[in-house]
Length: 333
Image (tube, rainbow, N blue to C red):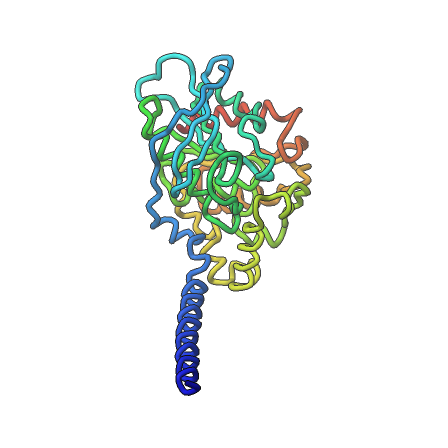
């Protein structure tokens, strides 16, 4: 009886050893590829798809446009957002359109219709279809909120939105641009490096392009705390990447592969930058450094620096910045 128990115990130990070894191998495999999905070359090879756009709810009309809560599918997640559509018959070829990407807002407090109201209104009244998407994990959008500096998820959501808009018969499929604020400056430039169907990009108070700039300028945002997020994945993923590949430094092979400015040769469409010199959250140096790279590489761009307006480029410079934004989209879409 004792011999049988000893044999059984030995067998259990062997099985446990095999399982542990397999788990260790799996962990090694994950570690070897962790973060690859953030590299530009990986994303350029990724097949990002759109879906049918579902109009969920019609909201009150604007002055010259309809408003809807609409949704689409991105990587299996249903992503919702606010879509505006001009009154009247679409012109030949379709309306020009903009994928509107919000900046950092604590996901738990995010409400689709409560943010960027004046920004969306200005573009909608200017005759564009505007789709202000709620990034995964925000509002009623499915998925995990992971931020954009260390995860490709939001970039994929934005490109998937563009692909979905291209299925609508009242939108010009070759006339879609992207607008982004703050963290979505990183998103917009990354998206433009990997998706040539983005015909123009506009960034307000954007951040993190070279990743050396993140180490140089950092970001001072009191609204960002792990407790304010739906999860701490955005914090832990960034920490894990730095533990695995070292601090943000593009002399490091991994961060060079992630850096947007290191791959600026892939930028095919014009881009416009806006920033206030008195921005207390995102240093204006992010934009001026990017503009220098664009100039050195002979990329079509504009940069507008305002003496005041803060992080949101509010009054008294808001109307001027919005006018320039609308004019840029009209000229390039």
